[in-house]
Image (cartoon, rainbow, N blue to C red):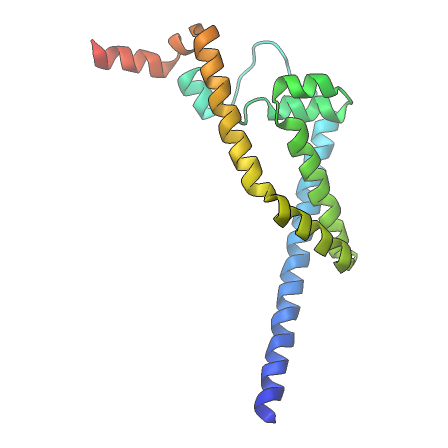
Length: 169
């Protein structure tokens, strides 16, 4: 009898710890995503020549799959859906997924477990994380191939192409 009681108490403690860490994670998600949404609304990035922090683009002259997401989020936050898709095709779907994550996190904090479970079922059913990883990989490769075929000058002026030239010569 005492062993069953101890096991039950351990399960309750484990559930409390999981709920506490889930709420902490929800708080971080709310704060982080709120910052993303606020910056997207207030910031207007330059559309001409600008300094990029993307190491892949700086080295190859070609955009990585995530290049253009900041511009896309900022355009979307201001209601420019067409521009948002133009900056990065996956920007609006990712922004929408972030909005859903924000709502789910709010539901965790408000103890709306049935809503959280529905979000989790939908996410599992569609394998959203795997779908986004696959979409970014396909999009990144397709965009690079398109740019190499149609606009190869950006690659030919990159540090990577100069390095390849030195190695070949």
